[in-house]
Image (cartoon, rainbow, N blue to C red; front, side):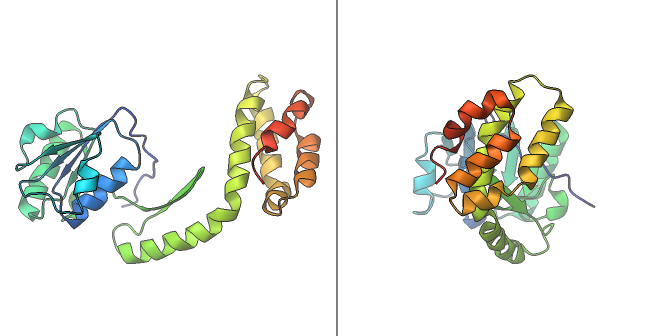
Length: 224
């Protein structure tokens, strides 16, 4: 069954990781990298040395005990990684009853979502998934994605600067869409990769609406 791909914002959201073994710690680190409001981390065992830096994060609420059903109250996202397959399945079923998305480490068929391999080169972010078939392959492909993304990061940064200025002009969406497509298909990316500021400025001068011509130096500032 195909999965529906989304990039989920965790801002102002509460998440839960049940189990702080190797898998649970990886999930906790991944959540904290995405700026959640709070992550509840539950495990009855004393934390390992590897866990201590993550648990020291002020967004983490550490509960040194076994999972309780009400731990999921108010959560948007739950990871069941207790090391006990039966308990993980119970947590997954409990989440499904309450409409909470759950990733069950020991049973992919009970997962509401899978966590893809992620490569981030701001502002670009790319993910790849094998549907749980081969995390090792996904990790290798992620590294290949990184090599592809790196030279395109400047282009993404520039487009991110241009977009709000173009939208603020109040033109119809079809006009803006054409403009963005024209920029994306232009030699601008190559000029940025070659750090050719004059060529970049000339392309923007030819493509952007006249009211934005005076903003071109500002748009290119810091990209080289």
